Image 1 (spheres, rainbow, N blue to C red):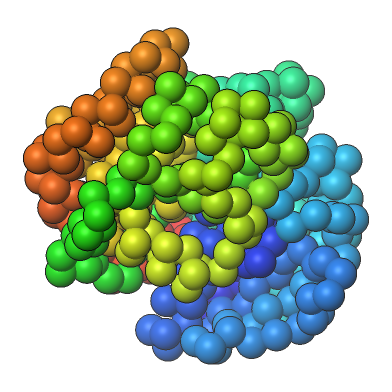
Image 2 (cartoon, one colour):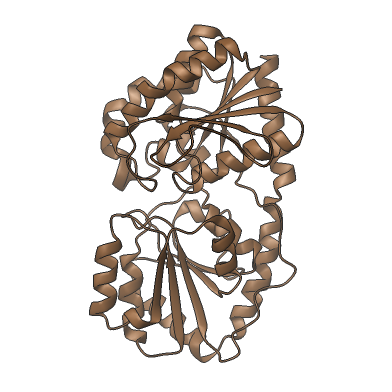
Length: 377
């Protein structure tokens, strides 16, 4: 197939959704399909590139100023800036099918091009582009745009969702029965990370420092454990970073914390391989790439009690689900593990078993089937 993938985020721009779009495009190209990626440009990035797997990457100036955040006006700018490049590719390159990641803001672009050219499209839904997915960030947006997004879902030849939670939200909002195709992982480690020889409990946070990811919460639960044998690495950046740094200083635990900012995927995985527990105090999640990657390297996961984590975090099996309303339970858990890590190793080994359910080869086959079904329709 000739596949035109369209996504408003692509590494190094964006978070997990862009990385999912990139990995799917790369694996489809590896299987012999011709794949082009149309995405946002940013200062310092080449407008044209080719991935090691052969994906042709086209980056168009889209009014975006930051790699880690995109405002609503910038999303509108993305639609305006990318409509012509996608239309031109559809007319001249003549793809068999378009693959759109995110109903908002990517969806309007492929929908309009579909109406003008007849090229079918498959829509892959991530958390933030479904009403109710990230209410603290997007509810105000969907109150305005939801009536205009219904045709994007209805006219798609196939709809997929990255998790059962996202699929259920899409069903409630649009009556769409989306096929669940989770985010995948290329390989699973044979063993969990070796324990620190000095008994250090190695904690990790990965993600945007935003309201949704809730990093400030960790400063509060770690403060009572000041001076104990632990350290935490915060990988990522975002609007809450200054506040996080302030709270860590205020709690007297800044010396036990590292904040390296954004890291490339190689460095993220290397840091994970030297960690014990991934901390995920998120307010909402779809199918967090960081959690799948952490499980594939044998980390236990401590996460909030939200539907978006249930596909990868199984309470009492490969980690712990804890209520955000009871901070003492988070502190007590970590305090217990500092004194007795017996249950930690078992959960780490179980994470490796959970990760095998996200085998990338099978997931790409599912995407191939969805894209082929669009051709037949």
